[in-house]
Picture 1: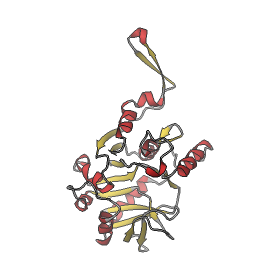
Picture 2 (picture 1 turned 120 degrees about the horizontal axis):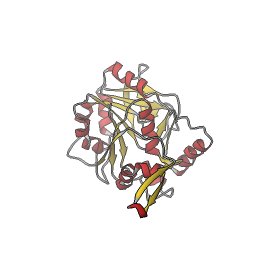
Picture 3 (picture 1 turned 90 degrees about the vertical axis):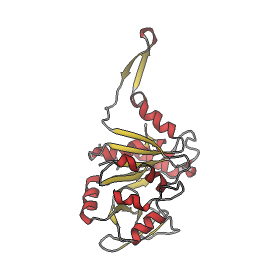
Picture 4 (picture 1 turned 45 degrees about the horizontal axis):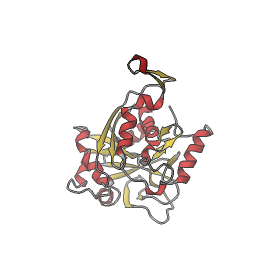
Length: 261
C-alpha cells in the first residue's frame, strides 16, 4: 500500500534547530525524522512513498538523490577519474520514493489533493505527517481500517492536549473533530491515517489554502465516515526545540520506542 507523507510545512515553532532545513529533514540521531517514519512503514512491508514537498523541498530531494553518500563514508579518487568507493556502508534500502512538488505555501488538504495522480487506481493509501514518530503496528492499523469500511481512519493517541481533539463513540466512530483545542481530556489525532480514495472527493482541486484538519476532516466525521484506531503506545511529534531534544535524548540513551527495525 502506498504511503503519503506531508513534508511541506515551514515548521515555524522549531526554528533555531537548523533554519536551513525543512522540519522533516531535521535529524534524530544521524538521520532525518522523515527517514525514521519511513523506516517504520518499511518495517511492516510498505515501501512505496510519496513525499509532498513544499518549504525547502530541495533538501529532501538532495537527501534521497544522494542517499548512499549521505549515509556512508566515501572516498573520491580524483587520480582515477573521480572514482568513488563507499566505506562503512549502511544497509541499502529498497524503497520507491516519489518527491512531489506541492507548492511552498500550500496547506495540507491541498497538498493531498495534488498527489492524487500518484495513488493511481489503488482503493486505499496511508497518510501521515513528516514530523511524528510512533511505535504503532501499521498492519494492525490497516486491518482495523478494512474492518469498518469507512473512508478514513485516524490514529488516536494520548499526548498533551494541544492538537486535533477527537470526539468518538465507544465503538470508535468519530462524531466531531476540533483542530488544536486549548485543552484535551481524551485522545488527539496523531496522524498515521488510512484513507479510501473517496477522500479526494472532500478536497478542492481549485484551492491551495485548504487545511485537511478543518473542513475536510470535519465533513468526513459529520458524514459518519471517520473512525479512530486507538493507540496507547509511544507517539511523539517534533513540533518544538523541546520535542527535538527529547527525541534525540531517547535515541542517545537507547530508549527509542519507535525503532523496531
